[in-house]
Length: 508
Image (cartoon, rainbow, N blue to C red; front, side, top):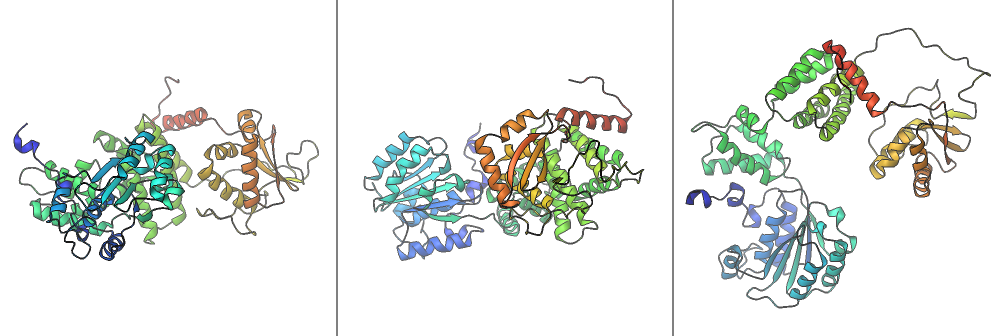
């Protein structure tokens, strides 16, 4: 490797902000920290939280220089004094950056507590920057707690994390917390344009906007993509949107629109041909589905949807396929079968003969007694699809809407219980909610009957359905039996065979 190659510094490191004023998109955080430095009211502990690549560690380093700068200017480090140069050159023992993921044990924190008591070696203030602090063990947090309660006056702690909900409340309550926001797309594009001009990287404005959009609010990721695009382009050429799409494994909006049009019109052949084209060109199918969802979301938000209900159903269906794709090894087959199934669900149903209706009163083999009715009566109109709010529906809402809202909330908190409940058939029997399972679902019934699960379920029922209901779990031969995953997959395979006039030659 040549000397030039070994000494090369990546763009995101070269353009890392060295002053508060250089930080993009975190104006509220920067203003507060600069005012604290000017007033001499720097706290002993800070917690910086937010997505990766949006400036948490960079701001922590600037703050470390600002509190030690010999000639601060409006709360900014001068970066010229002896202290600033020492910190920038990484020649001081008083600024410690600790990786919480690899130094997470209690022994590491005990050593830190011993070192904290000593005065700074050559600076005014010791600064400990602990990145990914949520990775510390509970014992390590407990060991750190005493130091945070009574810190020496010459020490400042700065914690950075992408998952603040994993930091104990006892630690949070002793820190000034700052939530770093995702950087707006237009600010990322403007900053990338300045870097491209300084580095003489020729790039189209639309390509810059594409990088800013795909960076998802992270400046570091955006700069890395810009640098990669600069290496990807042909010598002397200009970075275009098309070349950028090839580099990132993406497709343009025209292909998104063509695919959605094929799905909406029920054109199975065109949809499968487009998937085949994506696979043959090595495109990331999961990213493609994410872009489809974003396209539909923009269409709905802009009020350009011709059938909003259909578009919402499309988004939900594509989200389910995307989740299944994430867990699958054979992504192409999963995507093809998923899209074909979604098209079948969305296709208008042809009117056919009405199913045979049971007499209103039957003494031979009644399935539903007057006192034991399903949550939604047969003659009751179906409620509109509820929103995604976690709040219980109003008192006048149909019981089925309340049941669905309860399931969504349980899925967020106890996904296993939600999975069990979806296989059951809920019925109202006076002041009892009976959840009936087909006899084949023994595991589901026994799991729900565990005391901790029943206690949780009873609380959710009282919250969403009403305090008067008691919960009972039972077997019922007449309860619905949903197809197993293997049976559902076999049905999807049958559908695929119908489209291609093929047959299943082997079944594992």
